Image (cartoon, rainbow, N blue to C red; front, top):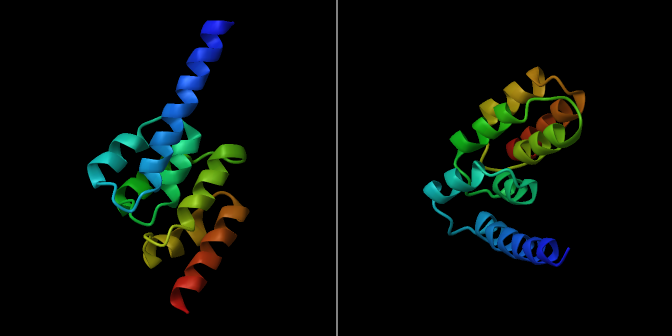
Length: 115
């Protein structure tokens, strides 16, 4: 139990540091790429929301989280609300996502961008 507690404490400490990097405007495209390959939803959410995340990474994220419901839909909602996403992608996602909730989020994000 003590070993588990220590490992969890270390994990959360590292996760918070990585979240900080993923949230930073100074993070490089190479760092975003590495962070995007993690399985830590906390860090991945920061990557999805960071306006400095390259569009290619956001597109791969969108494809990776293609399921219906739960974390997949939540992640796609984060992605469509990222201002780095192009109008063309937002239009596509607003029409073609399998989730009505994500379609609506993409449509609202596009509307905000065109105003």
